[in-house]
Image 1 (cartoon, rainbow over the protein chains, first blue to last red):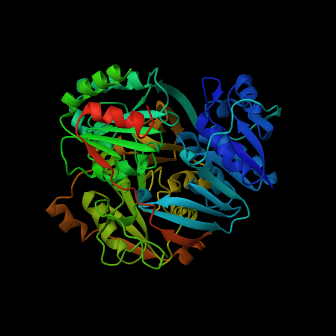
Image 2 (cartoon, chains in turn purple, yellow):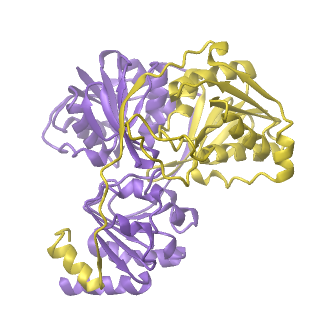
Length: 310
Length: 249
């Protein structure tokens, strides 16, 4: 069996989440990778150990990861593959279901465990239950939760690269613009430590008071849906059922009550710390360490304690 | 411009789902059901397009059991003009739903289909993309802003790392993200009026669609529970435990 993995890239590098998808794919068979972007991205893909061949999409539509040409490309390449796999993320969620429809396949999103070539475990109801499903489709199209698979190394391989292009089709969509949230911090989906804020941060200005702690720990900053909806931070900070699913070594939830939709996005973290003034907040039911107190008093104390500990 | 809005009946988002003792699924008997929250946002967006004079007719569709009528009545009370219930006892997967919707699109010829980006029961996040694929239409998924002008839909999308804007030729598919709008509550007079709005019932077979699932549910289980840990007394205590006990800093 040979598996096609759609890799996502950022700033010339293959995203760590995609390298986790490579690990999941290697459990199913030989792995070929499909990348968009320039030659440097294809070269980066070729260096991932375990990838036997890299297919590089060179058409303009695929360059912006537009769903219509990219899904058509994936479907046109599908013939020789038993599985098509990608890390769960905005690009894969946009493209793979469309490609699956073109192949008359029911996709299997957010796989957390591969049982065998046709059986997979995935969370439903915001992670309140785990469903084991078996697919009767001839090909399987799946996305995998990166946090459940160790990323393949970035270096060590030397796969051949060949160019591919999407089938000719009328362009029904056009890329207009992209507005990237600027951040010098690690990405949420690959950070070792995450500091997240919720409604308790009160406003955009106060939310920034998480920054010294995040700086001190080299952490990414996340947020609950409440904090995003209230406009404290941009949408891509959101951790939860409909935002990012993360599983860092350390997750520090500050002023987050712990709605089930938020817990769905972070409960697989290795160590969870909750800081909240409400001792009854549901976040404490999943936290390894809980600190009841006013976060505006606790945050400076925490920074001081970290400085003191060196 | 005609707008089609599919809506799904799901366990109310405030209810914690319980896994059935026999591990075959999640208990829905006697549980409060509501319209999928993302679908409410989709209905709201369609109603706003009508209020702006862009949409002329809104058709709500639901695929499911008889009680899905209640979900359609909610859509009608919010401002949809008429409803179609595709009656089936099968738990139809996104592929089957997309096929049913494709058949309805052929009958109704809408210029825009607005769907919720995902249903909060199966969390698939697939139907809109699949319908777009089957129709060969453009898709604007995870939309936080939609503008219709000059035969195109300009859609701002929530993606990893920011916001992307795409311009779509109509007819097109849009899937609604959380921040597209805040859905209204239906007023009592509108709930009364909704009772008189037309609702048609069809079967998937009438549309020539096979909705047999492709995925077999082998089992459904509770995830391993996470135990509550300890309460610490101070920031200094917390730092000491993270360093010496958990060894994560």
